[in-house]
Image 1: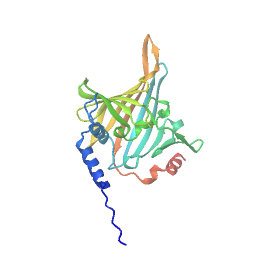
Image 2: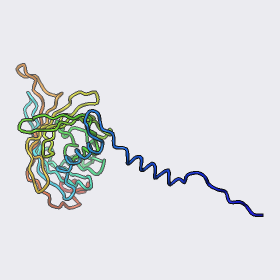
Image 3: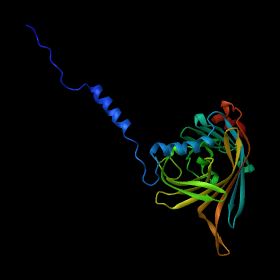
Image 4: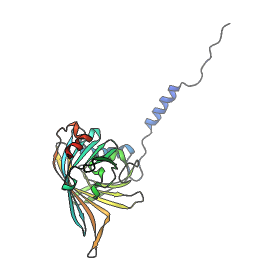
Length: 273
């Protein structure tokens, strides 16, 4: 007995797939009503900002001086050396001054950030969003720029900021692993950030950062003077509220290769002895 072969009258799955792809390619990306940008355009803007201060083709090191100004309490100063390898997402900070903190260090590998205490001879897990050594700066301020990965643009205006004509972008975080969930950033015509305002989720203004000076090395830029103002901490003096501020000055920036050993716990333990 012969069996008749069944005829398949349905449309093959690959045809549906091809139609789906064609339709999606044909439909333009939606434009954000507040910015006039598509999602891809917004990401490209932030990627250009990231690229100038992220050093993926070379290691980076520099000396940092962090001066904390507390109204009515005077000033304090810390000096440290920063070693970064942006392509691997790692950095090491070795504190040199004051003497009581000499040998303390930070080691970041991926999402793990640890503080080494040479007195107790132990490592403690800390958060990237924590205050750096109880200053207005945060631990995350010393790593590579990841705006395109962490934020999306939800507002756009233009503004004259001193001598700079800037694009002002309002941004919201894409995930919770950021120091502040909302941000406003002023970008000059060279794609350099000149001012940043950080906000809480409720919209409370937390701090303001100004970056007046960069040093260009090759095609990269190093911010060499940064002023961070705490919008919540301070003291009223002579009838005027004066904010707590942190001044960060960067010297001796270098893109020379750094030994792998520098990015290990053993390195911090060794230099502290």
